Image 1: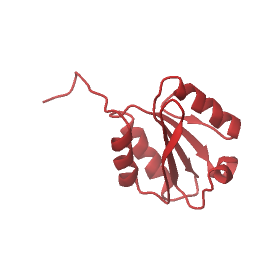
Image 2: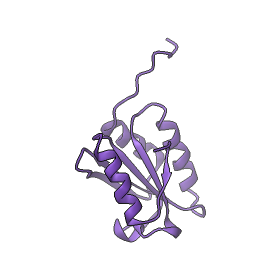
Image 3: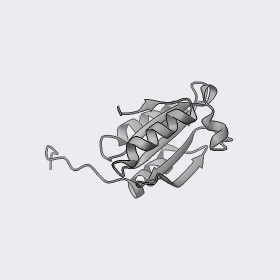
Length: 119
């Protein structure tokens, strides 16, 4: 997967889960919308977190997906985190702030160590 893939259907979701279950990686699902004031800043924040943490990231536009109903999302932005080879849901939050998502990614995702860091 790229930094994030856009998904719209349950089938897309199942494909994303299958890809990460083979590696046991963490999967972060972000559900947002272009009209949501809080969604683009969260999107940018998750993008920056990809530089420091190892996880797969999928995005779903709330106006173009059946995942909103599937995950019973009532407020945007929403983030759901899945972990392990069985893709167990370990966290879900709606109307979530970037710092809260960062705390959960820090908790569930391995840190990427860089040998090019300045000390």
